[in-house]
Length: 350
Image 1 (cartoon, one colour):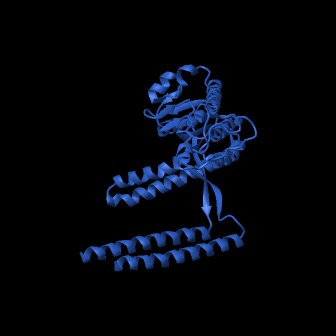
Image 2 (cartoon, helix red, strand yellow):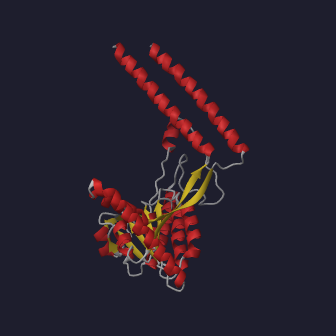
Image 3 (cartoon, one colour):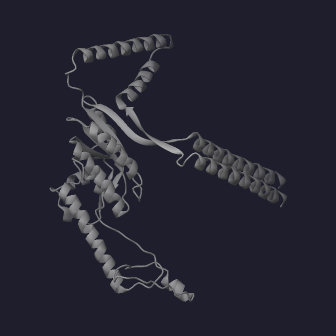
């Protein structure tokens, strides 16, 4: 058992070091005044991004002897095109600008925790929207908390204030709260096997009352207000409480149906609001979406007449935060290496 004692001693030393270093980082961070991260908008010109890739592929097709010459010719052509564009802009400032296709992303978890950043992206974008622009939201979410996705859907609605066409593209799933968001768009696009729908409400509450009662543990649930608490985790649930809880679920479901009906009035809401899900073409046949294609295909189809800009709000960590992350990574690698070493030594003993 020597190896076990040796490993325990090593682990204790590492834990002591990590705790001490973490405490030092917290003290320094607080001394510097709070947050260790900053946010900034990352903007990517989609056409330029893929143009560079295409040029690399074109260069790779050339013979090695002609590759350098090809790159020089391409650079010269790019420089000439840029100069020509600047000259045209200078001569005629009244020439209508190319409309912009703004692309945002929303990848939702059960709490719709992407919503605050999504809201900030929309707030920054709204003043820039002009006639002819289009906003595309690439949406992926299986739904979650009612209030969280209600707020996220309201953020989608805000985009309509700018007057631009609003499209939502779903490549994998927009179900329940995800569809609550998607149906707000002027145009809903889904991939052939994307999961769409689930217009319903679900809730589950574990109850430990019988277990506690068996072990002679009493739980008192005191309320002021008849329906302040309908179902509980620890107390004894009543039939009246269950019925009230079901009534609340039905009321929430009705709100959900009204929300969808107001935004897609041609939809037979009673036919699709039973919680069922459908895939791309099925969802199109039901009227839940307007087109079956992938987000990449949809965006590429617009790239000839739009300037495509993808925007996202990202966190830029301070040097202190990055240092802490690197230290943590080094410690984890050190522990993994030590475990591997100890196990190898133990293997050699047998």
